Structures are given as C-alpha cells and as structure tokens.
Length: 212
Image (tube, rainbow, N blue to C red; front, side, top):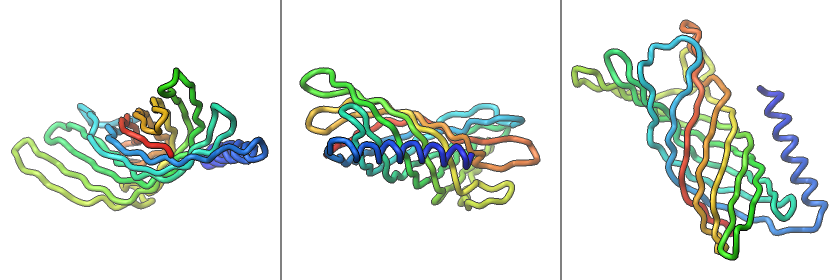
C-alpha cells in the first residue's frame, strides 16, 4: 500500500511540476461542502445481517493547479464524515467517524456551452482519524453509546485510511457548481484478527462547490 501511495503522489506531483513549465495558467481555489452517505465494505467472515449507509457531512478547501486547458490537479484538505449502520441479531449499531483527508485528484473539464462545464476526476486520498463514536440500539429498547479511540492495535479502529476518490459535477461560469462522488478505501480500518475480517470505508457524496 505504501508503494502505491508513493507512486500515486509522485505521478501527480510530476504533472503539477510539468504544468509550471508550460504557459502559466491561473491557479484556482475551491471550497466545497455537502452530505456523505458512508458504509463499510466487509470481506471475510462477518455476522452482519444488514448494512446500510449513514448520513454524514463533508467540508473542504482545495487548490486546482492547471496542467493544460482542460486538465488540472486538485489537492487540499477535507473534513469527511464516515461510518456505518449495521443490523445484527439483537441490536442495530451506528458508527460515526470523522477524518481529516488529503485528496489529490486529476480532473478534466468539458465545456458544454456558454453557461458552464462538466468535470470528472479521480485520484488517491490519505485520511487521518480524528474522532468517532458508536451507538447500539438493542431490541429491548436499551441504547448504549461510547467514544471510539483510534490506534494501531487489534480490535481498534486504525488511525490512517487510504483509498481512491471518483468525482463528477457541473459548474457554472460564475464558479458555483454541484458535484457528486464515490470513495472506496483499500485500508483495513478495523483490525479483527479473530474473525479474519477486513473492514473498508466507502461512500457516496453530494454537495455544492465554489471556484474562484
């Protein structure tokens, strides 16, 4: 995973450096925010009967460095809510996680007339766990809550997450836009060696953005 992360970042940094050697183009800045609908992807043995998406939020600020007229590299910082809602035999579990993410996406833009353009993009992200909580609603009506502590030991939520983003959106000439996306993690964010089970983050997002 570390090798993949290094190669992905190196490729995108190389594109940015190449862009600076060409005709100078204006670097743009983007603020964005909206809702996320995350859930866990499981592999291996698990006792979850139903998995559904949570409703969380995200906010972020990015810099968009042009490579050419229609291609740019976008990177910055985002606060992203992730988690899961799962039904077990005797209770329903709600998990809320908050990450600070560093996305680096390669984005291409297509003008579709005088009013605006469509953009699509993809790239890796690196996330750092900030806080989290879990609530269990038992069938008998009793609920319990506790905080989540990130760490690197078994049976803990891991403090680092790595994966990939996919973007699609529409932007007006005045900079206002709407965007959707999907992210999929490839890091096992909850180490459960007893079950030989892997847990990865994933989720859809929908929100607004403004470029200036």
